[in-house]
Each structure stands twice: as structure tokens, then as C-alpha cells.
Image (cartoon, rainbow, N blue to C red; front, top):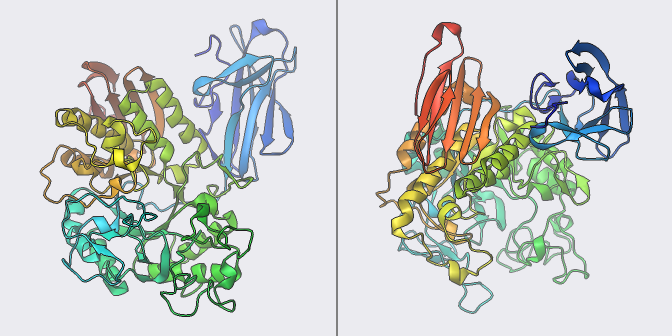
Length: 617
């Protein structure tokens, strides 16, 4: 804390409301200036992204001993990204943003505060906000129909479910990367719905399910047909209906920046007959792709992979195919899906994302649209443009990689003060409707398994041969699981929605693709995470502080992270103790003890008549 507090964007006595604001909503700033600074004439300097700054003279509100008080109220009417600081208008003195949202006095330019202004009618589905998500890599979760024949001759079936995924690059003669299939299917997921319900899961996110010729299925071959190894479209509809009866919704992975070269649309390999954009200049799909001799393979491809030709998302026929009646989105939502996660959202034009949103919301405002974004989604720039997809016309929310990284780093030993700052920056920058349903996860198909990231030996760029079969020593597993649970306790109680990557709950290990995509070990007897995660899911459902409640950072220092969630009827205090010693912290006027490497969650009703209601989890 600075010696003299001029301003703090995170405290209500200095700025209301907290964080981002709806367009047309009043924002009030309060500034305190010590009398010993002499005459000042403070101005709020507000700059809309990439525009000229505007100076607003602040109003003098009076004095308290030794301090002059100023304020200014403004209602930004245009959604966008704004930045602000204060100019005292004497002796070139200004107040810029320091640590933890506080202001400091300087004679040179510094970092401005950010104000995100979003669409006034931006709302996101309520059903997800108190729920728990579960991510499934379809081929590796559960095989409901065993020993089924392979639908295509170039697939390698893996009857031994305990084997490590093949990792030899396909560029080698004996390479099998992404060609081996363990047989997971819709029937298997349906059989395990009771298991997922017991874990408190309310939403399943499925990695791609469309017909494709790699086990990850990100090289789409037919958007309108389920991969035959998974089952039929009708069986997918049956899965959605069965899940719905248990209060579980299903969202799909939408891969719309590229297709497979081995697809109905491109058909370089000739699997689909004489047609396709690659083989027929008159193909109805030709306009979807950018053919040019300047590209090494004769066409623009995703990150240079010849098997992934990029799509021109502005092509009218492609937009209609994805977003129109009878198109991709309409087909799968009609079959029972409740939304989509957009792969590489940063590589899709904002206008295209807005059209996808319109197509999804045409099936109901309760349908969900999540984008894959790895950084702060409000400040993200891609292809020379500031992205606008999180301001109310595009995505509902994003995959919250900043929270994932914070949870992993905290469990690995990073200073709690730094972690608290990273968390609060996201809370301050994101529109509340998006923050309340952000996807908070510890691991995904694109990252190391949570336990490996937290307690494993860092890969540091080492190759797949080094990563293969590498495991945490058995005598360290207990400590590793405690750290994983601590990280999950954070993600279950921060703003947003927790998501468990299949198998994390039984401590499955693995570095990145393909080692993080092993078959679920249904013979595992590991139970040290499942019970606590199930209890955390129940807590979320039973406490309204976790349904969009405000976030307040109480303490972030050394090994301790203590924050508060304030709902309409209940308040929750969350104390995480990463350190080796028992600690005691004040909460609700009482002393709460937190075990070494553990956490405590305390809940109290806000109504005065219920003061003293107290729970420890």
C-alpha cells in the first residue's frame, strides 16, 4: 500500500461499480489528495482504445483533516475498452496505477487503469453459473460397445485400454500419432452418467465428435455426421436426452477455422470420391479455401499443417453452412446439444463469432457459447485488431487460462500476493456476465494433466520420448494430490464455473498431447480427490455466493490466499493455506484454523437474524 492512498480501483469508496460496466451505466470515481500537495485541479483523463484522451474536470467534494476530496461521474455510452489516469494539473503531477489497483503520484507517464464497457443487454445463461463442468475427450473416456469394428481401414484399434497413446510422429514410416483409437463412444458416456451425476456434474464439454480421420477429431471430415466410431446422430440425441434427465447438459467443440484435408469439403486424399475443393474447381466448397501458388502446399493451411486447410470464414456459403437453417449449429442443437465451445476463437473474425452467437441464441437464450482464449480476453489482440468478442455481441464467456495458470502456480509455490493480483485483474477487467460463467479448469487436452503440471518434473521443451511413461514417484503422490485438491478448491470457489478434465479426479498423469489423453482408468481405486470434488460441487449448488457473488480479496501473502464471495443471501470465506504449518485466520468474527496444505470454506447467511450460522468444509 502506498503511504498516501489517492485512489484504489478495487474499493467502493474510490470507484463504483467495481470492474467492468454496462454501456450507459454511471461510473463514479473518488480521488483523495493530501492538502500538503498544495493547489491541485484534478482531471480524470479517459481514453477510448486507440483514440485521443478526453479530460474531465473533477468536482471538489470537501475536506477532511489534511485531505481534499474530489469526484466525477460519467456514463460511457459506447461499448469498448477504455483506459484512465488522473492529472492534478499542477507541476506535471499525475496519478497512475500501481500494485493492487492503487494509485501513485508520478511526474512521468505510467500504467493506466482499465475500464471495460460492454453491451447493455449482455446476459449469459444462469443454469451454468452454479454448476460444475466435466470435459471428455470422447475416444478415451469409456467404450460402451466393446470390440466394435473400425469404420475405416486406416484406424488402429487399441483393445488394451491401459496402454499409453501412440506418440511416434506420423512423418516416420512407423509413426502412429493420432491414428490409434481406444473406442470411446456415446454409449460409454451414457453408461457413466450416474458416475458424473454423483460428482455433481451439470455440464459435459465434449471434444470434437464429428466424423474425422484422427483420434482428436480436430480435422473435421463431415460437420453434419457423428464419427461412426462414436455412434450415430440418433445415439447422440439419446445421450443428450438421458443426460438431461439427470440435470446434465452437453456442449460441443466447434472447429470452424479449418477442416481436414481428408474431408467431404476438401478431399485431397480422395476418400470421398472425385469431388471436393482440392479436386474440383467447380466444387461448391471451393470458395471456402484460399488456393494460391505462394503457399508451400498450394493453399493456405492452419499453422502450416497441410492436412488442415484453413477456411475463409467470410465466404457467404460457409457462413450459411455453419449458421443457417439446417446448418452445423442448427443440426446439433436440434439434436439436444446446449451450446458450443469455439476452437481457436482468436483466429475467427469477430463478425463470424457474432453470427455464430445469433445462430446459437436462436435456439434459446439458455444456449451457451464459450471461446478458447489463452490470455486476458478483454485486451487480446490478433491479426492487428483488438478483439471485441467479450463485450456482449460474441462469446458468452471464455476458457479461463489466466485462472488455470494462477491455480497451478499457487500450488507450485508462487507468491500469494502475485497470484491474488493476477486473479483480481481478471475479475476487474471481465464483464460480470462473462466472468460468472467462465470455464475454470486445471487441465485440458491441450495442457499437461493438473497433477503433472503441479508436481511433475518440468518438461522444459523435452521431446516425447522423455515424456513417455514418466510419472511422479509413488512416495510423492500423496503430497501431489493434496496440492491438486488445493488448486481445485480455488477453481471451485473463484468466480466462474469449475471444469474437471476427465480422469483428473483419479489422479491421472501425463504431459501434453498425446500423454494427457490416455484412456480413463476405470479400475482405479484412487478416491482421495473424488469425494472432496463432489462435496465442492454440492457446496456451489447450495450457496448463492457462488452464483455470481462479488469477489473480495482479503489477504494474499506468502503461503496464504484468503478471499470472500458475497452473494444475495450468503457470504463465503475461502482460506487456502499452501504452507507447512497450521494457521488461524479471522472470518465472521471467529478464528478459523486451516491445516497445512489445506483449505477451509466458511459460509454464513447475510440476514442479521441468522448471524452465527457457520460451516467448515
